[in-house]
Length: 297
Image (tube, rainbow, N blue to C red):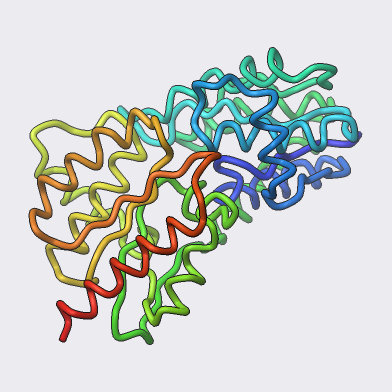
C-alpha cells in the first residue's frame, strides 16, 4: 500500500512517528515536496478563503500527492496535553480537505489524542488497520514509532552571535521556510542568532504559565507565552520575533498577553499570508535588527 504524508502543519514536529509507524507496517511512503509556490497555489485554489495560510498550504500538499497514494494521512490532532486543546482547525481538518479537494483517496479520520502512550495507541490501532490486520505487527510498529519520536531532537539555539532573538510562533510557521521566507537564514546573514522554544524545559514553561490568572486553553498559547516570557524576563535574548498567520484567533490573544507581560522589551510581530511580500518582510527585519544593535551599543 502507498501511504501519503503531506509535509504541512505539524509534520516537522511528528514526522519521525508517522514515517516509522507506516514504514514498519510495510507501507510505501509518498511524502509531498517542501512547500513551494506551486503547492501554495493549489492550496489557495482548493481551500476555503477564511482559512489561515498554514491550512491552505496543507491543502496544497495533499493536492500534490493525492493521485499517487492509496491512503493519505490527515492527522485529526485533538489534544497534546491534559486540559489543553489544539487549534480547532485540526479537529475538522479531514472533513475540510475531503470536501474541498476532488477525487481524494481514502484518508485517516480517527481523532488523535497524545495525552498518553495508551491514548495514542488507540489512534494507531484504528489507522494501522487500514494497512494491515496483523495485530502483532501493528503493536511492533507503534513501539518503534514511539521510540523514534522520543529520540527526535528539534530546535535552534545559536550561541555564537553577539545578538540573539527568540523566534516564536506556531511550529509550522517557524520550520516551514517557504511560509516564513527563510527568516532564520535572513537573520544569520544580519549577524543575529536564533533561539526557539524547544530549548527551555517543561518545568520552566509550567512556572511561567502558573503566573497567569488562568491556565491557557490552547497548547500553542502555553508554549509561546511561557517561552517569550522566560526569555524576556531573564534577558537571555536581545529581542523577540513572533511569526503569526493572518486571522489566527489563538495568536490574537497570545500576542496581547505577551505584549502586556514583556512591557518595553523589543518585540516584532510578523503577520504572514499568501499575499505577504518578501521585500516588505526583509525591510521590517532589517529595521528591527538595526534597533537591537543600537540598544546593545
